[in-house]
Image (cartoon, rainbow, N blue to C red; front, side, top):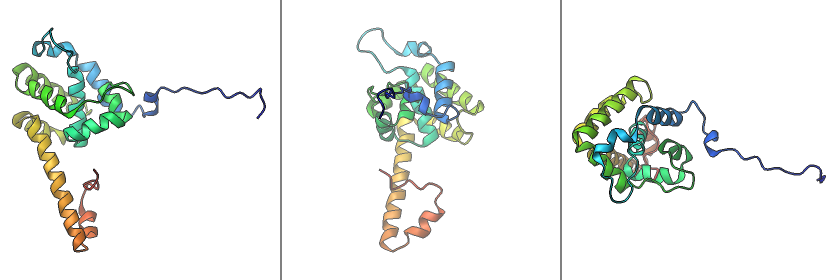
Length: 190
């Protein structure tokens, strides 16, 4: 190689690799435009360790409702998936959103009139503005009634049950016909 042709590294911000018309950008822009952490200030104390920003919990909830992610799956995605980090406003090498914190803070929202009201208002508004799909509305309603943990546990239980059915069907060479009729193909993904 000719010395005059030195290689200059091109630095592209990792966020720019995620398509601007993706649901990840839509959720991120909607959350951080429509909701402020201050909206939830009555739920937090000025003392003690810093909390996870409420907007991050709301963004995580929207991702979970859109992608049917359990708390544990969201934790894993926030560790490894740049698209999820974008939505959660986490730096590429930043700490992931752990499942226990997500569940605890979301529970705080659900157990307060202010938090539950804001959560319901923002999620239904996001559905109306087509940031979340319309079919999410039923999930949002049950999510708010039965609580965050119950909804996520239900999703996890259904996924595990479907995985068991598929594994049992494998034993009888029936996996193919069962998998063909399933809408989702990721029940065996860990």
